[in-house]
Image (cartoon, rainbow, N blue to C red; front, side, top):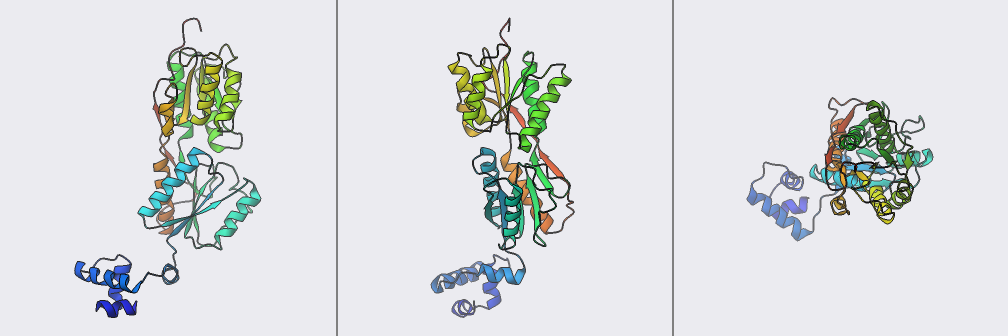
Length: 331
């Protein structure tokens, strides 16, 4: 820094203000300093900054899976929002959703230069007393039922499922079958519970639940079973990927969509408008979830009035396309 200051003919304090992006420096002086930095090959030392300021400008993200569309889009939104605030992201993937793996991920945080952590977690593993956080590290959890120990940001899973079921009932279907996600998933549980409650409140008997694993292949297998159910005229799939497999199975079994069976998905992935037919689905605002996670954890770092146990729900909306219609007469 002293070498840059000497070459640019300014003080070391001015070099510091330029390298940190602070105001109070004229454009001519800033240009002089930047030219001197380039000539000398000077780069600010982030480690030294961290030691001096007590912060690393890095957020850790713990996630179980990068194979699901929801996790990928949430992680993308977190990285984008963090960058807008001048933070980098360090990813800590957890290979297997077990308590030991979760404990290990949190333990590794103590070895990494992160200021706070965002956890993208669908499994109920955060409430265990064995989970230990490094001192001073703040945590926000996305897409989970994390109890009263953590701040949570989540999509309104139940509200979206209710809208999907009500849409099909309003079209005139007697009942709605449900292709659910895996048992261990918080999102799948919320959506299945809302499907069952909405049907019961409408005076309808919920059909047997059919379960998949979020993949199109599991949706296809479930679709082969549902295609053989003569009373099945409407299906709410817990995500768009399973809905894609379901559509293929119904087509192969000669069950036309939506003439014979209506299908609603959940997520509104970019490809859902190109399914055949284009998929009616529940839109999730992953960008907003990611933004609120970052803003929430930064607020906690600034010690704003953010309490443990608070939950922020991001609204969903029904996107109507060509995969739903009223039942044919006589069905």
